[in-house]
Image 1 (cartoon, rainbow, N blue to C red):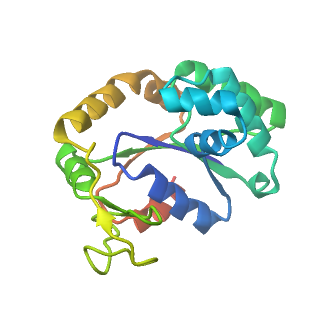
Image 2 (cartoon, rainbow, N blue to C red):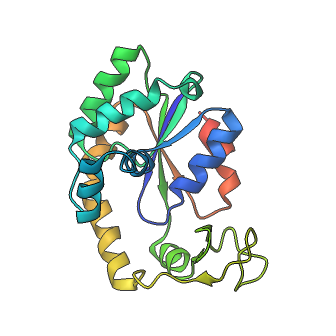
Length: 206
């Protein structure tokens, strides 16, 4: 069972991928997390990430190949936010062909821009452990982390202007990807305005 979850900023990709993966008993894979983990021991990747430079599609695919060989991927997995380009789609297709596997469904999460603004501009993170809180999962105390008691802070780089630019970039860059998967009969569009737990029922509907 293989799912891809895609969507613009603050459509809840990570949260819903995690919920769906746990419900299905499969792995939740984020290429961003893979890169951050590899950067701990790979100075070249670490340097590129620190400079904000792009990692080549071929390197990401090789790292993904290693990740998919792990035991927790045997039953299936969810790719969170990947692929992002047509070239990545073709490389992923080749990789899955090598493994004798195929994509079951591609889920595009959507949300009204005003809800996206609210989710991002009101989200907070713990200054101590890094846990994120937002309108879907608020903290018990608006100032204190539920887990460690650390102070909750709003990210200063989350502004309406930068967010609008990210939304516009996603909408433009995602057109080819969504059309490709729609033409393949794999695309399911889900409104993520509701509670994150709804993703399980929506994803499993034909």
